[in-house]
Image (cartoon, rainbow, N blue to C red; front, top):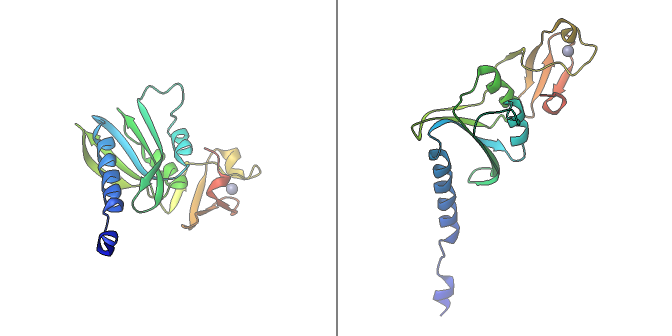
Length: 169
Ligand SMILES: [Zn+2]
């Protein structure tokens, strides 16, 4: 009888397996487009704003929030049909969701996969939060990554250091 109670139940492992399978299905449902995966929980709104996914957007968009993830607990996912990402969009995404990965989908298959990555110098991507900064008057901006985690950017013009939440997108 004791042995019966001690018997290992594979429920947990199965749940994890099921979760991963579902993720695969979500990716494969798109015929052509992108899937932005591993967005930190709650950041998908910001990422969709960066991508201009508002009421004027023509793309079919799926926002998946609080999706169980094997590595990070919960994550958000955005699927966008019929479009890709520009370099500037990718840099902006890296500012708010440095853990994000981008899957490029063609004919329901992932043909390319890359990580959102910030370059050493971020030029013309975000405005300096300092209203008196000369960069805002000249219409140019340039930041250097001071720290990656948590993210801190230094303005090349006013030399102040900012966290990601101080930028508006
Ligand atoms: Zn500045």
